[in-house]
View (tube, rainbow, N blue to C red):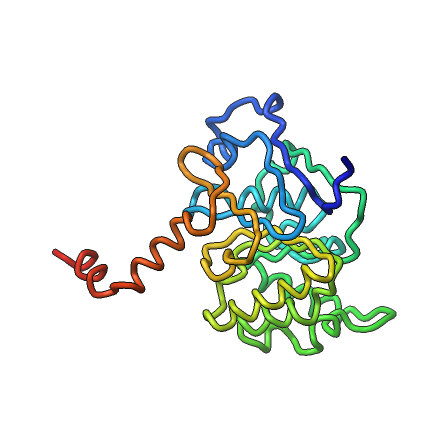
Length: 249
């Protein structure tokens, strides 16, 4: 059967790995990886800090031709080489369709993307300014959260592949709901999302596939069974009890 995904599967070429004791192959998300089937609309990769989810997402993006620090596939700047060699060991399976739009968002290096946009516009050249595709206002002149939303609402144009690493980092709960709504608009416009997140709000997107990275590797989980949902729900149901336990000395 021909896949209708933009990206349908990623696989680790395990026979090429000389040792699973060295970085990044020692990370739980990588050590146990064989294949991951991606959802044609939304796939979430979740897990604790240090589990390897962001490293895996970054490798996927680089394998697909995106700049390691973020941006579109036309961005080629490099502030500091910090990405791993994992992308060289991945096989990414694509569907017969090709995405018209694409972006790799890394929360930790979005500042560098904003700086590169300003550099490109200052250097001149034919055609409209790059920043016009992001709403026309410098991303450095907006809050972190506002610039993220400008990216989602102004730059993302649909029929695209969007790889997002912790997009909730600068967003209030209300803004996370706005991002969820915008994601849905883009999904309806034939887009595919692959997202690493800690946000129980974002990962509530209906029908999404959720992969959890833990000490034993990567497993697919239901939304209600994620630790993020269980911990958040437990706290909100009885914050006093939770705080008593946490602050007991």
